[in-house]
Image: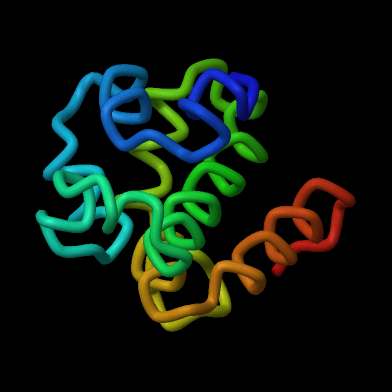
Length: 116
């Protein structure tokens, strides 16, 4: 899914992300490592830290969606599939710990045939 479909007025919109993933904004917040008010209060939604967390999650989902065939399956992978070489942590756990770039690098390595 294109990034624009997750956005509203130039910002990532938790409600649009939640609708696509058939979940709630509160669940999107939890998955991204944000507090509930970060996706409910307009000034918090537009904050740099909230937007960064949402962007990282969406970038990872967009990168793996073609592999799984749907945003829902990509989301399930993001939340539950342990990544080899990361002590059994999931992409979600790594992204919440500020390691989203490592997840993106891992996906690129796997896609290019390097088994991580």
